[in-house]
Image 1 (tube, rainbow, N blue to C red):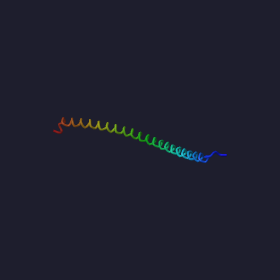
Image 2 (image 1 turned 45 degrees about the vertical axis):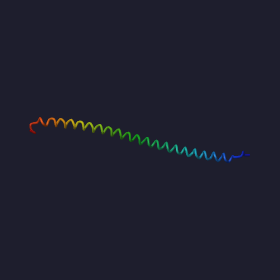
Image 3 (image 1 turned 90 degrees about the vertical axis):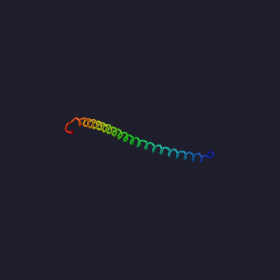
Length: 83
């Protein structure tokens, strides 16, 4: 003999189980999204470090070119060819 309200308890348990399964699926989706975003972030960081190295090299080349240009500009008046 069942105690009154047994069907309600079973229905509530079924509903709770369904919600729990939904939460588990949502957590799995969030986990997959975080893993994908972590991979993307790693690739972005790699590209940024490559870019930083390129900027340093470009600044170095610019500094050398500026020094060479300044040396030439300083030496031009001393040459008798341009007088």
